[in-house]
Image (tube, rainbow, N blue to C red):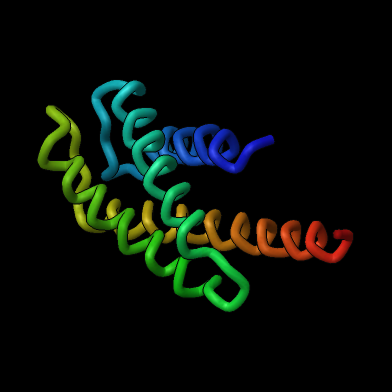
Length: 118
């Protein structure tokens, strides 16, 4: 499965779940939560492609968290009816950051195994 497809499934589903689990995070429709997840997935995919290498795991994950924080703050302003207070911004970014960390580790191990067999 391609990296982009994995992100396009994983991130929006996570944002949708967090919309239901984090009390202060509110999107008036599930399509807004899915849209936020899709945008974060696409941004994360291109950041991952350009930055993720052996030795950049923590930097790439930290940048993912920072970009997620900024994006969520912007979505709060531009999505009508959405409420994304600071506690929800940081909690959502942290949870997505943990998921990205695990995914990045898997990608790095998977890429190393592919290079070793060449």
